[in-house]
Amino acid sequence: MNPNDSSALSRSRVIAFVSTCEPGRAKSFYAEKLGLRFVSEDPFAVVFDAGGTMLRVSIVPRMTPADHTVLGWDVADIDAAVVDLAARGIQFERYDALAQDGRGIWASPHGNRVAWFKDPDGNLLSLTQFAEKQS
Image 1: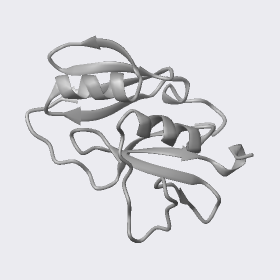
Image 2 (image 1 turned 60 degrees about the vertical axis):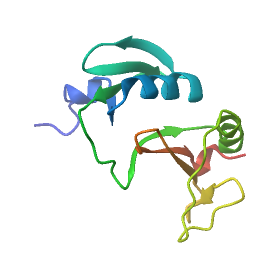
Image 3 (image 1 turned 180 degrees about the vertical axis):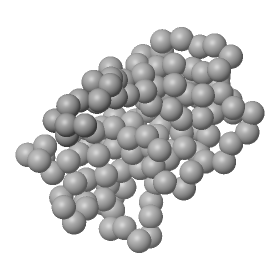
Image 4 (image 1 turned 45 degrees about the vertical axis):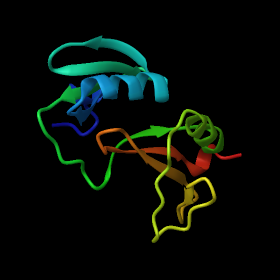
């Protein structure tokens, strides 16, 4: 196979997944708190448009949230995004091992800035402003 050839997946859109045990609560969180456009709901998932990416919040009978980030957003201005989400009632996570600022934003050694928060099911979500996008 020629390494310059594109595979079917390299030309296809990604679908993001997280899980919920309580679809009504998840629907409210992702639509109202995060401001994502609700697309549909069926017995299997609540679906949102996340900036052109389909986000399927899969409905499961039980779950154990991962202890790492499962979904994140690349934001142009993390300060503004954190202020906006905090005003919507989002609480940002604090980690003893990381030097975070007063709003919970951590600056990585490479200059990227990251803040973490959880959805109602405990899924760890993040915002990242990459260094090359900083003013």
